[in-house]
Length: 103
Image (cartoon, rainbow, N blue to C red; front, top):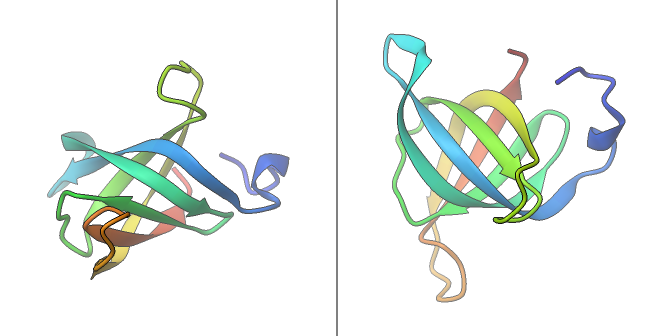
């Protein structure tokens, strides 16, 4: 996605997403897929929540869907920069900060 994309001018909130964990040493191949709630995504970073643990430092692909039934999606690439275990019964188990990078 280009830096001048107007859809990233303002942060977006609460979208359905999938995180693809890149295989170590082969970033072009996805090792596993994890459903996640996109809490916030901006031009340079994203905050997502999931019940599945992911190691910090992993390269990831992120696919966003405007709804679970909608076939439209956007794709981003990045690195998982931090993970926080959440203590909120109304959210997922982990929160993740992802630094987005160009393809």
